[in-house]
Length: 302
Image (cartoon, rainbow, N blue to C red; front, top):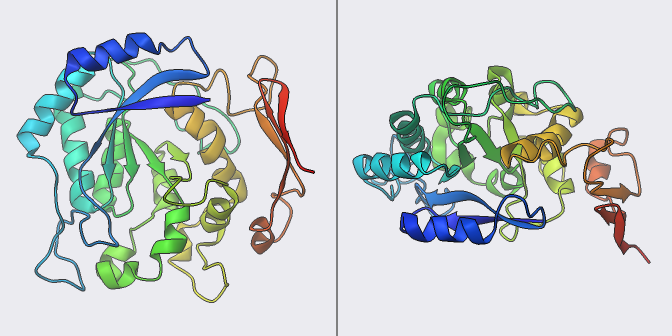
């Protein structure tokens, strides 16, 4: 099933035309959110930071928008009924995204968090404003104040635990200890009551979720030799919820998928082991035996 993301910068009439071509009623291919990039990446020193890089003191990254213009564009697209998601990795990029959402919506958002109640899907609360479930993609470097604003503005934190296993080799050098302490801050988001939606960020990272699950519950390198602020790790139930009910909620699909229950789409996989019971390193070795989409087997291991 594919949810098509459209370019935020495209003209509104073009976006509306594409939305009509792939309506929400098609659960195999439909238009989802509009995506824009607030900044780059930590690895390339282009993620936008509020203060300079610890290992590059003359550089604070590359913000991609003028804030006033971003606010104007976001408001126009929100008023047109589009869900908006902003790639933001640095804390400056996150601030830009939150400021645009705040200026454009007056607390448009998600409602309750499905991750806080482990392995359950939470229905959105009623809201006088349109329920657009605005999102920030990645949100790797945040401040406690920004996490509180996610909650206040009811913005979804769409994150990919995979990235930590790649980035932990140099993230501390890029950020310094004070900022690193609040990076990849999954537990802080959950504690604050923010909706977490996990994914893989394929093809940047492997498409299978098992590496991300391992990262989420251990925050430990794959060779087991180094940890990265383990106080931010999640339980296995919280991590699974973020990948399933959280992600379904983030794309308005919580009535169709994210759980195995009567009336749902019957999309699921059969694994070769119980990932809730094995030691965390063994999760990395998990194999898919069978994939079912809409109740039909579409893959079976030989």
